[in-house]
Length: 169
Image 1 (cartoon, rainbow, N blue to C red):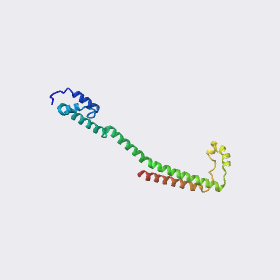
Image 2: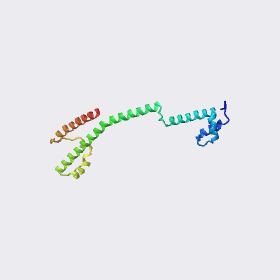
Image 3: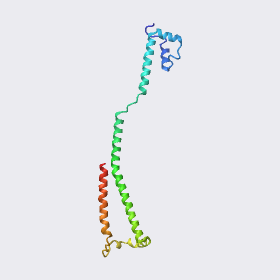
Image 4: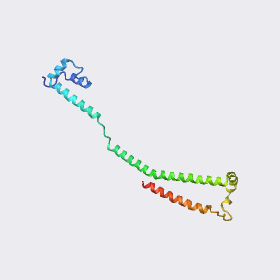
């Protein structure tokens, strides 16, 4: 047993640092470590620190509080955007359905009356003149306008109700 600094302590420390202890040491060095308290303590302390370092490296790292706060804010913002987007999507689907319905009604009325697209296109340049905006006489109402106004008002009211209902979800 030696007291104080051991002359072979550097050799043992180098083997420990490289990870070659006890596989790459000679039997003479093994015998020396069994007899030398300083070398045995060096091996014990170094292996304990290496084992604890490996355990600490394998543990998950906690992120900083700033990163956690940022992620929470991002998650809250995305949730708010999704909550806002649901009623808008519902209103868009409703508007698409109404537009498709109006297109079908228009197509059905054109099929019933006969396609007069070419006549309408020929009258279009004359209809775009400014004097066409102020009619000299009130046109005769044949009931279609009286039917159209309540239908449009109903569509507006129903779309508002659908929007408000989908917003509360």
